[in-house]
Length: 231
Image 1 (cartoon, rainbow, N blue to C red):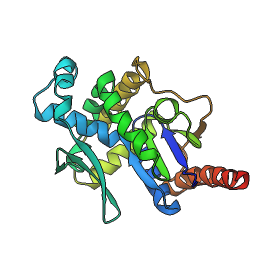
Image 2 (cartoon, one colour; image 1 turned 120 degrees about the vertical axis):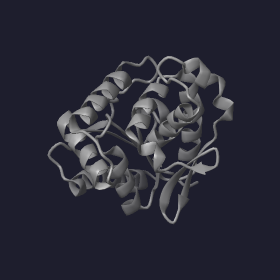
Image 3 (cartoon, rainbow, N blue to C red; image 1 turned 60 degrees about the horizontal axis):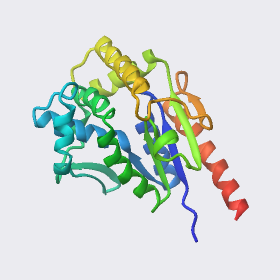
C-alpha cells in the first residue's frame, strides 16, 4: 500500500504560508491545499449575503447547507469555487481577509471545512497550510512546520503583493488588520493559532522567498527519506 506524505504548515497572517507552500508543492510534485482560501470563500459568502460576520454568526450557521466550496486545479493553478462560481480573485480582498478570521472562530464552519480538508489529505501527497493544521486538522501529519515572521515583515510583504496587483492599500492599515487577526486567531476557543509541540519553527523574517521555500523542502525531503528507509 502506498504511503502518502502529508505536510502541515501553520503560522500567522502574512507569514508567506500560501506562496511558500504552493512553490514547495510545485517543486516536489505534491498537491497544495490552501485552507485559508476556503475560509475566505466562506467569509465572501457571508459578505455577499449581507451578514455581519462579527455579530450575526448564527445567521451564517443557519445557511451553511447553502454553501458549496470546491478547490480545483485548472492548468496547474489552484482555483476556488463558491457555489460553482470562480472566486479566486475576489477572496483576496482585505475585507474578506478580516472576515475569514471572524468566520474561522465558528465551530460549525470549521467542522464543515475540516472534514473536507482531511478527506483531501487521505488521497494524495499534500502540503496544507492554515492556522491550525498541525494541531487540529492533520495532527498526524508526517511533517509539521510553524512558519512565521515579524509583523512588520509580514505587513510589508502583503503591502508589496497588493500594490503589485494595482490594489490601493495602506501599510499601517494592513499591519493593524494582521495584528487584529493574530489576536483573534490565537485567542479563539476552537483550535487556536499556536505552534504545535512537535512542529518545526521556521522564522522567515530575514529570508528571501527562495530561502523560505528551500527551508520547507529540506524538512520534507528529510522526512520522505526516513519514511522510505522504514518501508
